[in-house]
Amino acid sequence: MNILVINSGSSSLKYQLIDMEGESVTASGVIERIGEEMGSITQRSHPDKWPDAKSEEKRPVLNHDAAMRLMVEKLTGEEWGVIGSLSDIDAIGHRVVQGGESFAAPALVDADVVETIRANIPLAPLHAANLVGIEAALELFPGTPNVTVFDTEFHQTIPAKAHLYPIPYELYEEHRIRKYGFHGTSHKYVARAAAEFLNKPLEDTDLITVHLGNGCSMAAVKNGRCADTTMGLTPLAGLMMGTRCGDVDPAIFPFIARTEKLCVNEVDEMLNKKSGLLGICGMNDMRDIHTARAKGDERAQLAFEMFAYRVKSFIGSYLAVLGRADAVVFTAGIGENDPEVRALACQGLEGLGIRISGERNGKRCAKGRCISADDSPVQVLVIPTNEELEIARATKALVAG
Ligand code: AMP
Image (cartoon, rainbow, N blue to C red; front, side, top):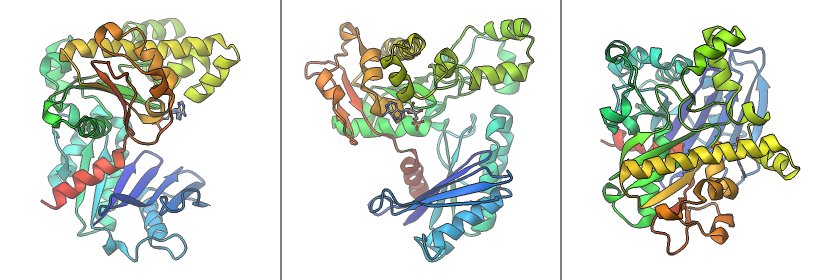
C-alpha cells in the first residue's frame, strides 16, 4: 500500500510517499514559494538508498493546484519518478493543524469533513492552506481516499479544568476560545514509541513528552492519553521557541501596543516571529547559539539558559499533574540532537527522580535510546519523531477499515 502524506502550508507543499510494507519512504519533496514569481521543487527519491541524491528545479508555481500537479509530475516522471501513475497511490493523508473540538481522531474526507474544517478556520486563519491542499487533492485524485490527521486531536482528552482559560466563559461558548494544543501527531507518535521501548502497554504508561524543534511543546500523558499540553489556542503559548515567546504575562500585549505604538497585528507578529531565542540573542537556531556561547556571547548563553529553564519548569509541573511518570521523552530537532539542552533541562531534578547519565546523554545515535542512569526512577528517553509516518499509519488504519 502506497500512502501519500501531504502537508500544505500557505506558500509551501511538503509531501512524502510511504510504502506501508516496511514503512519505507519512497520519495519526499517540498515545493516552496507557491504563488510567488519563482517557485522551486526539491525531491529525494528512495532516500534510504541514496540519501544524498536530490532533484532540484526552479519554476513558477501559480497556486496549490499547480503545486499538486508538479508533485505528481515528479513522482511519475522518467528521471526521478517512483511510481507509474496516480493509480499507484492508494490513499492520501493530510496534516491539518486545527481540528477544533470537532475532531478527536483522524477522519475520512467527505463533504461534511471539508465543511467542518472550513468552519474551524477562524481558530487558525494562518493555516487555511491545509484545506486548500485537501481540495486540490480531491480534484486531482478523484476516487482515492483522503484522510485528515489533526495536530490537535491527541490533546482532545485534556479535561476542561486544564483546557479552559480563566476568562469570561461566554468567550468559550461563543468563539470556542480554549487550549487546543499542537504537535499532537508528534506527541502521539513518540508516546507510543516510548511505551514500546519501555515494553509496557501504552494505556498503562505515564509520560512527559518534550518536542523541541523550531516550535516547542510538551505534553503530560496519563495512561497513554493526553492530560495537558503547553501550547494553547494557538502555537504561541508554553515553552520558549525559535522565534515565538511562549508564556508571557498577557498584559505585556497591550503594554507593548501602547508604549511602542503598535497595532494588534504588529504585536502579534513581534511575539510570533521576533521573540523566543531570536528575540533574546538574535539567533533562532540552537546550533548557532552553541557556537556563539563557545565564543563567550553572553546573550546566547542567556537564551540557552532561559530555553532550558522553561523546559525544566514544565517537567516539574507535569510531574505534579501526573503524580508519577515512567519517562521523560525528548524529541524533534533540538530534543533529539542537543545533549546540552537535555542536560540543563534535567539538571537538579534528582529529587524528583530524574537522573541523567552524562555518558549516555553525550552519545549520538539515530535510534530511540535511554539516556538516564540505571538507578533513575524516571527514565529519560530520546525518541526520534516521525509525524509523516504517524499520519500514514492513521490513514492506512482508516482506509483499511
Ligand atoms: P525541527 O523543527 O524539529 O526540524 O527542529 C529544527 C531545530 O532543531 C533547528 O532550528 C535547530 O535549532 C535544532 N537543531 C537541529 N539539529 C541540531 C543539533 N545537532 N544540535 C542542536 N540543535 C539542533
